[in-house]
Image (cartoon, protein in one colour):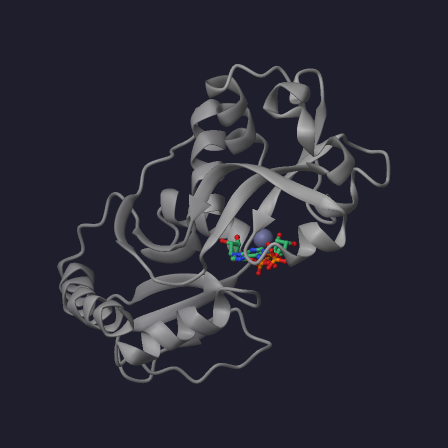
Length: 223
Ligand code: PRT
Ligand code: ZN
């Protein structure tokens, strides 16, 4: 029996629609049953695993799936976290995909914006990305602490949980609505196609080599 290539994508969220659209544009057909974790392609030897985006880097790095589509913010945070805890953090970056653009930025309450980056010395910063934040603070030689929240980061200052936030921004409307002003970009991100580091199955490699030019074609068409 030929082995099937497994691809992890976000089940439901900001990357889901475009991840599926990319596969479709590459000629890979699926019939998705929303209740199911796995979808079998009806056109190729490919299985789709639909999971939370946070699980995708680990699934690829551990070789549980062959390919993954995930935001660089989630990927780099996971890589730093796994490196720090002596877990396998290897993967192969295949392509940057022209969707899911955002930036991880520091933002402070409007009334504090004039005081600059140095004001963050001794501050508490709410974030979902403590490793990316700490790396940036170290580079900038700022001694601040992070408060890790997996949601509602933008309300942390008003709730008295933090002095500043380090959160994802695309249009800036959410920061604005919460009286926050973006001061520094910590990390720029878009969706990435990644591959597990130890892939030797010739059938799977042949299939990836067949898909990549199509991915490139889709990217070119977007430019
Ligand atoms: O359930 P699961 O864990 O899979 O989903 P999730 O809720 O963790 O992620 P989701 O679907 O919100 O985002 C998935 C990925 O999309 C992120 O990891 C980013 O790579 C990318 N992305 C692109 C964004 C945004 N743009 C974005 N604007 N992720 C989140 N946001 C949020 C941000 O956190 C803030 O709350 O949107 C708000 C800001 O948007 P603006 O337009 O008001 O600035
Ligand atoms: Zn998530």
